[in-house]
Structures are given as C-alpha cells and as structure tokens.
Length: 322
Image (cartoon, rainbow, N blue to C red):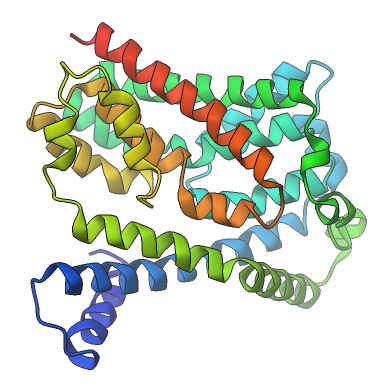
C-alpha cells in the first residue's frame, strides 16, 4: 500500500469535499495535484531534514572532509556522486545535505557532484528500468547519470564560484559537531528540531511556487503533448523534452511510469531519458530552495552545465539505441 495514500485521501477531501470542485475537470485535477504534492513534499522535507540533522550530529565535519576532500580532488567528485546514488532522496531533500557538506568545508565542486547524483540516480528507478526496458537501458541510466554528476562537479569546481554562494553558508558551522559523539539524545533532537524549523521557514514560499507551476503543467498540458512534438525524427526533441521536464517536480521512480508511456507512444529512448533526468536533476523546486543559499548566476551555471550534459546524453543514446 502507498504510504502516502492517507495524503491522497486528504487532498481528495479538500478538493472535492471542502472546496466543492467538480470532479474530473482540468482545474480540479490541477488543484488536487497541488494539494497532494504540497502536503507530501512538506512531510518528506520535514522528516528527512530532521533525520539528516540527527545523523549530522554524529558526524564531525573533519570526518566528512576526510571522505570527500581527498588529495585527488577528482576522486572526491567520484565519491560524492557515488554517495548520491545510495542516498534515496529527492532533489529538495538533497539540499540540506548539500548545505551540510559546504558547512563542513567540503569543496563546492564536490558538493555539486553529490547534489546532481542524489536526485538523478535512484536505486528504485534502476530496478524499475531493469524490469521495464532491460539491463542495457538500466546500465545506460546509471552510468550516464554518474558521469553527468562527476563532470558537472568538476566543471563547477574549476570555475571557482565560491563568491556566488551566500556568506552565511560558509559561516554557519555544524552545531556542536566537534563533540557530536558526546551530545545527549535530547540535545540531538533539540538541534534537529531547530534546524528543521529554520530550513522550512526559509524555503516554504519557494516550494509552493515550484509546486504551483508543476500543478499548472500537470493539469493544462495535454498528456500526449510531449509524444506529439518529441518524436525521434525531430532534431529539437531532446532539448524540448529537457525544458519541459524542468518544472515537473518528481523523483526518478515517480516519473518512470510516464517514461514508459512515452516510449510506447513512439518517443525515442534517449529523449525520454533526457526528460526523466531533467525532471529529477533540474528540478524547479530545487532551484527555488537553492536561491536562498546561492546567487542566481551560480544557479544558472549549475543548471546550464547539467542541462548540456543531459541534452548530450539524450542525443548520444538516441543514436546508440536506434
């Protein structure tokens, strides 16, 4: 049973019971989508930030630096990307971990490798792809996502853009991290509650804006729009699919059923993979959250590098999988 089924019931009750909207209309479905995703995302965000905060209380920043800040800085990018693969978080929940890495002194380029890999590569999605499309597509998915994450982090690291990150990120060190192992549980819980509340207060409006845009796309863009304009013979199919994927908030596992439907309608596999990677790796809600910790120029650089990698990957695999 879907653990968020009660949330769906609540969203349905609000949409049709409280607001008395007519069922099966475009507007009511968009509102229902907005309510469901808003409640679900805030629950996920709160729970995950709280859990991450508890974990952080056990990890001194020195330990994190030792793992990710190797003498071979490229190895740090590889480790960060691989760490992102095994953390089953969506893009929004990866941001608090990103903040923690930066606060711990991990190089910015290495943290971006993690930030890209965590939402883009998901073990649940890997299993679903393996079952639906076979090992070849599943392998392409994980290798391409890993390469994009590593190269994106290396590129951002070489650009030396630390000045585009807000000062408070570097100044805000992990509370009591030097003595994390000596903290009492009540102190860890108190720290986690405060940190969670602070993050939610900073980002809630940006999350609502991102979900609202996603709800509009969900309700008012026809289901066959992408299939119609992104067939394999269209040169612009891959960049179009990438652009359309940006405002559609979802995790990799959630978007795979749509990927399956698109491929059945004739959309090329590389195009659908580009769409899926854009939904997860270029998430608009993620950019809204990142706006609080970095300047717009760095967000555009981040999005541009990942976008180029995704588009290149889409064209490459459209060619390979003909």
